[in-house]
Image 1 (tube, rainbow, N blue to C red):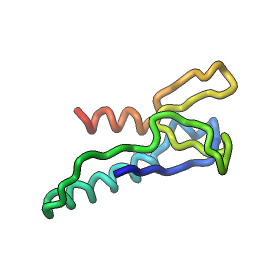
Image 2 (cartoon, helix red, strand yellow):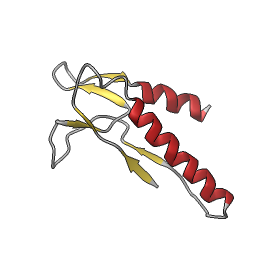
Image 3 (cartoon, rainbow, N blue to C red):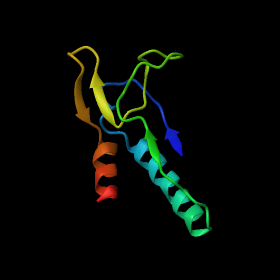
Image 4 (cartoon, one colour):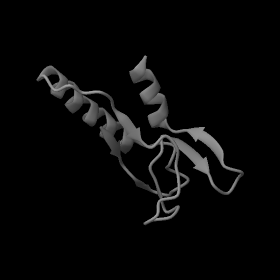
Amino acid sequence: MNTGVDEVNDNAKSLEDNMRIDYISNHLAYVQSAIENGVNVKGYFAWSLLDNFEWADGFSVRFGIIYVDFKDGLSRYPKKSAQWFKKFLH
C-alpha cells in the first residue's frame, strides 16, 4: 500500500504537518483492520520520505515527511510527521 498527502509549500507551516499525521494514522488504522479481517498485507509505504519535484505541480506542493530546503543546498529537516512515524515504528 502506498499513500500520500500533499500540502501547499508554506515554509512557515511545513514542519508542523499535523494533517499528514492524521492522514497516516487513519490509513494505518484501516490497515490494522484489514489484517484483523484476514487480508494478507505485505507492507505500508508513506509517500514520500522526502519533499520532491512533482511533475504536475513542480515545487509548489510537499509530500515528504522530511522537509527539503530547495533554496539552501537541499538541507533536510524532519517534519513533525517523521517524528510521529518514528515513535509509531518503535
